[in-house]
Image (cartoon, rainbow, N blue to C red; front, side, top):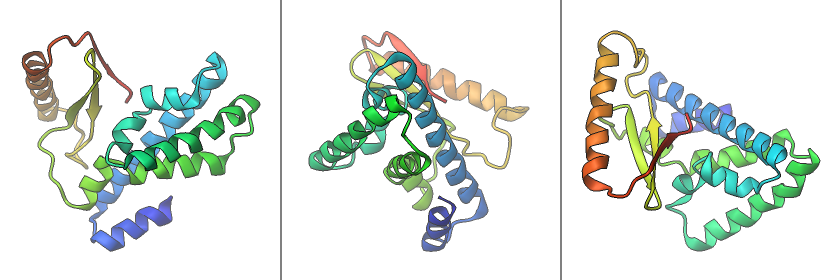
Length: 177
């Protein structure tokens, strides 16, 4: 993956701060896959469904065409028996992490220089759920230290008000980070 991030760095003339954010995002994706693998094996649930719920798969693939999403789902469902049998290997995990990484809006925003105002964001999942996201947009500053902590609290207050005002019927708020 390092070569892919190096390629993005060259292609978009990214600063080291952006490269660190890309590396962090890839690590988060890798951890999400590990967690979904563990849950699939322990609970004998669909690996794909777990990736949708815990790995935010749909958020990363929403800009793909319906056909591409269907092919991706078939590719991931192929892993189901491999997960149960324990033959899901490092190459499978790397391939899946790269699919999620390169389809991430967050990664595209970093590469295109999109500046995000705050560290928190959210997506609605259906009519009852909201998934919170956290991105350290103040790198290399610690986003939860000193004055930054108060800024994060204010962001959360504003986001809670926005959710309350604009999304009726929300029963669940969760995060996977």
